[in-house]
Image 1 (cartoon, rainbow, N blue to C red):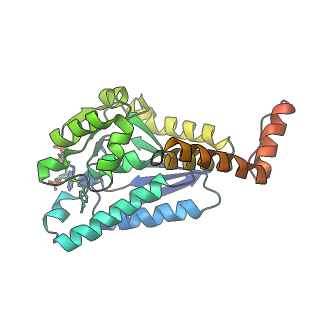
Image 2: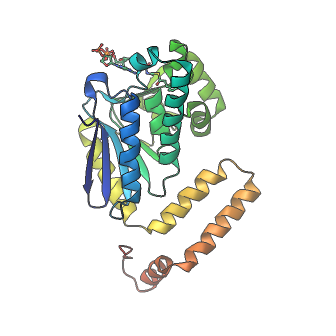
Amino acid sequence: MSLIKINNENGISEITIDRPEALNAMNQEVVAEFSSVLQAALSDKETGIIIITGAGDKAFIAGADIKAMQKMTAEEALIYGKAGQKLTMLIESSPKPVIAAVNGFALGGGCEIAMACHIRIASENASFGQPEVKLGLLPGWGGTQRLPKIIGVGRANELITTGKIINAEEALRIGLANVIYPQDELLSSARKMASTILRNGPRAIASSLHCIKEGLSVPIKEGMEIEAQEFSKLFHHDERLEGLTAFIEKRPADFRD
Ligand code: DAK
C-alpha cells in the first residue's frame, strides 16, 4: 500500500504523507517512498513547485517512527538517520521551491522535514517541536543544524533541550512559521502562494534559492561572490530577456517556456 499520495496539477506537485493512523510518522518505508516521489517531482519538467503536507487533520508528520526505532540496532539507526538526512538535503537543495503546509503536529523528524522546506505555512492547529531528548535521542535529520539558523541559537538550544512543543502562534512569533491560516484554508492558500511563485522566472528562483542556501554557510565575501556569479549566469538565458522586455513593454512576463 502506498504511504505517499501525489497530485500533479498546474505545475504544482503536491506530496502528502499518507499514514494518518500513525499521525504520518515516518518509518523506513515512508522515508524511501517519499525520497523517490520527491526525486520524480524534481526531474518532472511540468513541475515548477512542490507542496508537502500530511494526510488527515491532526498531523503534518509526528516524527520519525518511535516504534520502529525501539527495535533498531546502532547500525540500522545509522542507515535510517542517513536516509532521513539525505531526504532533508534533497528538499533543501531543490531548485524548485518547496512549501511545507503544516496541518497539525510537526514533531521531531516532522519538524525537521518542515525546516528543510523553503517556506513553512501553518494551520491554526499546527504545533512544532523537537522532543527527541525526551526519548533519549537527538534531532537526527538536521534539526540541530537548521533550527538555530531559522530561529537563532538561544531559542534552538531551549527548544531542543526542553523538548517543549510550541503552537502555531509561537512558531509564527519566532519565525519558524511564515504565516498561519485556518485549517480549511491551508492547502488553498499554499496553492495560491505556489501559483504566485510560478509566475516568476524559474531560473531566477532557483538561483536565488541557491544563493540563500550557500550564503548561510560561508563568510559574506564568498556569499557575495556566489551571488554575483549566479546573477551573471542568468544573462546566458532568454528568461531574463523576457522579464526585462516585458517590463519595458508594460506587459506581464511569460516565463512558461
Ligand atoms: N512514531 C510512531 N507512532 C506514532 C508517532 C511516532 N512518532 N506519533 C504518534 N504515533 C502513533 C501512536 O503510537 C498512536 O498509535 P496507536 O497507539 O494508536 O497504535 C497513533 O499514532 C495516534 O497517536 P496518539 O494516540 O498518541 O495521539 P494523541 O493525539 O494522543 O497524541 C502526539 C499526539 C503527537 C502528542 C503523540 O502521538 C506523540 O507524542 N507522538 C510522538 C511525537 C514525538 O515524540 N516525535 C518525535 C519522534 S523522534 C535519528 C533519526 C531520526 C531521528 C533522530 C535520530 N538517527 C537515526 C540519527 C528523529 C527522531 C524523532 O523524530
